[in-house]
Image 1 (spheres, rainbow, N blue to C red):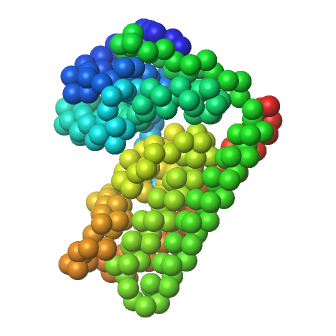
Image 2 (cartoon, rainbow, N blue to C red):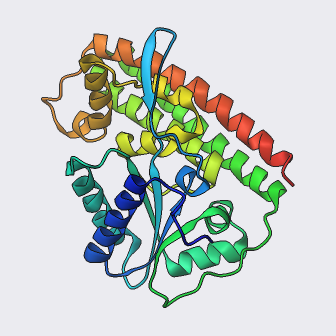
Length: 292
């Protein structure tokens, strides 16, 4: 792996240095901090704004940061990283979004020995931002793309099928005028479409119900995803927040208000997400067949 971010602009280097300092301060169990994805490949988009089909959308690549830990559970480490994430966005100087992923050192080494696609790609293209020196990463097993294609297809089939079922449950809830439950089913449909994308592209997906983070984690796989929830107006933001909140509120808060008009506005968005998911995942799975 590379060990220098000198190729990045000074402002990006400063962002990453401050993030590493914050991780080391709040998560002393961090053994390695690795930059991966578009910033590691130097293929990032700092900011792009365009109007397509009359809809203004913007796109900015995330800092994808992989944190390898020891002597702490993945769940606890994830909570600490979520807190760092929240603090990061309170800093007015920070503009580039950040996406944290964490694993125990034993997990990544087992995955490397097994030739897991996500982990071998990180080792191949990643940039080491911090290394405690206490551990070494295992050797990468040569990737077998026929296995990768088979696993990606299985993951996609499962999650895409789940998502379609939840979309069908939405229709049933609408017929019963149960709009609050319809919003929950829409959340679950979106969640599973996003999972389908993450799994098809990386063969890895930690549990996540926060649609903001799920959407952010897949947006780099297709600019078309920005059209689903463009967040370019107060109404668009309200609709997205309604779906995001529905995971908890629709089930447990009797005062959570959802109208027929809300669901009518959301269903075309979920159908668009479904169509984009199917197209980009099938294309990615097809690529694996030509990479062996």
